[in-house]
Each structure stands twice: as structure tokens, then as C-alpha cells.
Image 1 (cartoon, rainbow, N blue to C red):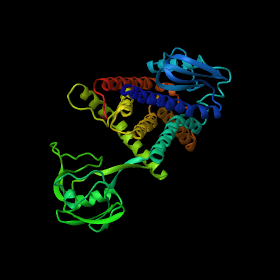
Image 2 (image 1 turned 120 degrees about the vertical axis):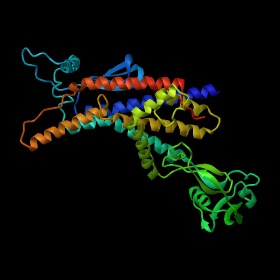
Image 3 (image 1 turned 30 degrees about the vertical axis):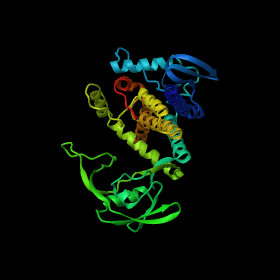
Image 4 (image 1 turned 180 degrees about the vertical axis):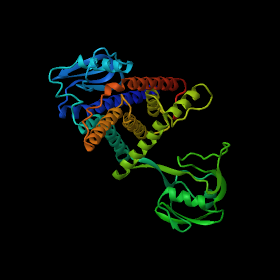
Length: 423
């Protein structure tokens, strides 16, 4: 049964990722067709084509390697004037010419007017931003289902289990099911507030009021002062330069409060997605350092950072563990899978906006640069510099694609040799 549940979790994430990729490409396809660009292919995956069907001028299909997708639009690169007689092309020019020749081989009569490069800058930006925007929309919808529909777990002010013998809570007479309503005469509205008040209190008797079986009960508790870890902005234990933990004296009463699942307001969804995007952007910005850390963890006993980059294999493994574990209920399992898919789409949104070809952000950056050049030329009365030739960036495109492939291989090896585990 455990193996079956593991497989269900893996399949759920694989299908969710495939659907996310399909919708990402749909985000490009729809505006491209609305703007009149000829789209010859809409493909999910890379490599050999497994199945395909033609509808009108577009061929729709699924390929063997489910590692992305693409749409093929006419005229991704503008035509350029041939070199003067006797002038030999540079290496970069030859690479760019090969890219243009490959595209010209699929050109059809009338493509000049229906080419991507012939569109106004703002329409090209809309087409290229459509894919990441679709991933952002998916992330928002899934986060909404998770937070508003299923709800999130939170610690309550209700005692979850009878306090252990000898603890201040046991001495005060707290019992399972008691809901704390006031501490030291101050009404309590949340666990965070109650926890903060207890930690800030000294070791002197203080009043604590609870609701027990519908009746208000006034008790007296004397917190114990203990050394507890100081948390940093990320919620992790802070450490000094020499690695020793930073601690502080804080009040403790020795009680575990119950957790419950409750729906969040709709207004909490966008801020939550925003926090996820900021967190992922931080990982992307520090990606070279993070990848070095992954490589170091592979050849050393150091643990792998669970908050670092994880490959597709690692994500599917985590989904399988979430589905198979007996440490959480079915609702929490479903919430875990939905949360994984929401985070994956947020990651696709951020990653695809990196301003480097062949990513969508590279095309957007090229269009913005073209718009800036043309506006600047018009402002100073200069001749129109014309469209930006993306083919000239093919060497950089190959470099970026090669680095992405190396990153994928490294994460694949790390996910096999030293996987990130939740349980």
C-alpha cells in the first residue's frame, strides 16, 4: 500500500507538471494567434514525437522527453542584409546565419506579414510574457485552493495534551482541551500572542484564564526561565561567527498546544504567492553559489540544504513521500501535493523571466532593448535602427542552454545520491 501511495504522489506531480507546461505554452500560443503570427507547432516535451495532430496550420504534439515545451512561430529572427562581396563572415555571423537558415527552411509565402519580428514591441512582449503569466496564474489558483479551500494548519491556544509531571502547566492544573483566553489579565486572541507573552514573562506567579467545558476557569502559573534559541529573519536558529547558537532566557510553562486546519481569507492568497516568489527569486539570484553547495554536499558528509535547488526527480520523490507517509492525514497529503505544484509554477514563473535567451525573459529583454533604441533614435532625429536580431545572440543562447543542461544533470545526480527528504 505504501508503494502504491508513493506512486500516486509521483504520478500526480508529473501530470501536474505536464499540465503546467502545456498551459505555459498555451499562454504563448493564444496571443500569438490573436496577433496573426503563424504558429507551425505547439509541442509538449522535446526529442522524438510520440503523437501529433494537425489543426489548421498548427501541428499539436507530445514528445518523448517531458522536460519543457515550445511553440514554433514564423519569423523569430528578422532578415538581414547579405555581406559585401568578398567579405568572410565571422564565427558569430556563421552561427547566426545557420539559425536564420533553419528558420527560413520552414518559411511559407506570406510569412513576412505574419512574422513574430514584424509585430510591434508591445505585442511581442505580450506573447513572450504569456507563458510565465500562465504559470503565475496557476500558482495563484492552486495557492487559493490550498489556503481558502483546504485551509492551513495553525497552532491554537488550546492545550493539546495533558502537561508532563513537574511542569509549570501541570502544577497550574492545565488539562487537555483547555482553551487559554487570557494571560496575566490580557485577553488572548492567537497562539503567537500567547507564546510571546509567556516567553517575555519572568519566573513569578501569574494568572491564566481558560475555557473548560464551557466554563471559565482562573488558574495561576509560574513560568520557568530557560535558555532558548534565538531565531533569525528566516525563522532558523541564529548562530554566532564561531557557529555556536545564539540563546536567550525566556519563560516556559511546558505545554504543547493543539494544531488545527482553518481556511484563510482570499486576501491572504496574493501576499502568500508574493512571499513564495521572493523566496524563489532569492534562490535564483544565488544559484551559482547554491549549485556549488549542492556539488559540495555530494562529495562530503555535509547535509544537503533542503531550501536549496531541487531537480524534477527530487520534487517527485518528495511528492511520493508526502503521499506515502503515515505521519499526516489525507487532507494534509492533498494539501502537500497542491503546495508542491503551486511552488513549481511559481518557480517556472521566476525562472522563465531571467533575461537570458533562450528563456522567455531573454526575448522580452530583446524587445525592450529594441523599443528603447527606436525611441531614442526618434527622440534625437536619427534613422530607425530596425529590429534587434536575436540570431546574433545564438552563441550566448548555446552557452546558457549548456549551463542549464549541466545544472539539470547535477541536480539529477544529487537527487539520486543525496536526496532531500521530508520524513
